[in-house]
Image (cartoon, rainbow over all chains, first blue to last red; front, side, top):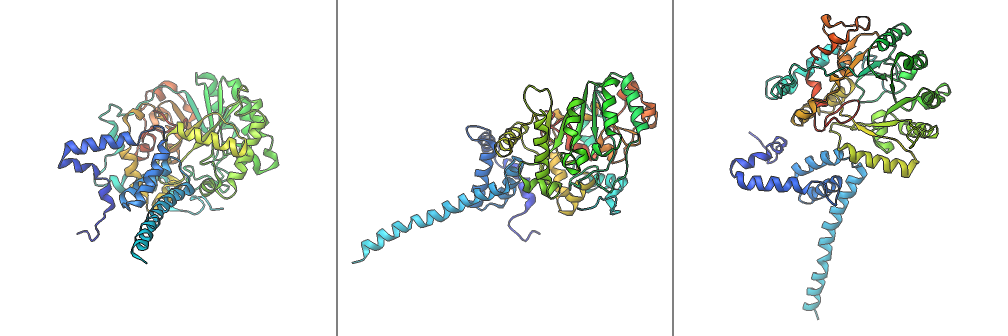
Length: 111
Length: 351
């Protein structure tokens, strides 16, 4: 009996989502594969974006996968930390920029 | 500086123990396919050689470095050194066969007292290409080695050197404190005599291997990164970057087990099995010779003590090209490292 919601072994079973709907899974995995191919962005840049997003959505599977993937793509550890700071800055900034909304509302309500 | 597993009497200094570990673990209950099970359906079992093109000699396990991932378990405390007599036997074989590439490795091969004599004899034995696997820092280790770049140039040696990353942090964690700085200085010395420079004909290749329990990335992309970074920061030029997957034996196996990465790494290698990479595995065109003159399918089998079958001839004194080219290559689970992803060999990716 597992006592946690997340099991590292489940990451390897990702493809089994196809068992209950192969059509949609196949479309998703094809799309996923295309997304990460080298384009105007390098494969490493895409991996670092994925790493930053993984921390934003706080997905342990994604953090596991894209930490390894970033290392394999030759990212430096400093570069990986910089990517996460970008995520953190946008998250923090997203809260703070709503401060303007709060200020607008407060000003409207106040004499 | 850490000591070799050998000097520490570590359990992994035993070749037999390493083979036992490789065959148990994730492969024990049949849940994960063995190398033999993987290559059988693609028609490669038994694994057979193509033709012997590369004569790879390990002329001693002594080294001035003690890298954490070393599959040789080399270090200053290793005393195994090839004698001039064995070298002469190798030259005699090279003179009477059509093998054109001599690949000299170690340890730090330059530390063998007969290294320069041997290299200077090799061309007259009919060898067209001499590769020396230099760890770079040896060139800076002692004034008696400072003229090695000139010596390499005079003998038209192709240099193949490990540099796991273009910064000190990753390089030194794998290869030891100060290794990056010394490697950079050595590369600059090699560049100065013409190595890695266009139009000189002097080849300087670098070897990238991952600084941990993960696979190497795309060889072309990493080469672009290395060329850009080394040029920009240190004005260094080189020819080609080869990516090599870390083999789960010896000190890298010790790291994997110690860090709790062993099972996951083996599974990763198995899952990344690429049938197309089997075609180009280096054991198909290489023969490996140890410091005592014994023959092996590759440097990794040498370190695991997996000698050729007796009927093939196990020693340089019984070297028989026809018998060697019709042999069956000895395989085990470490072979998955050479068939993962884009493949891996002493000449880099194979696919």
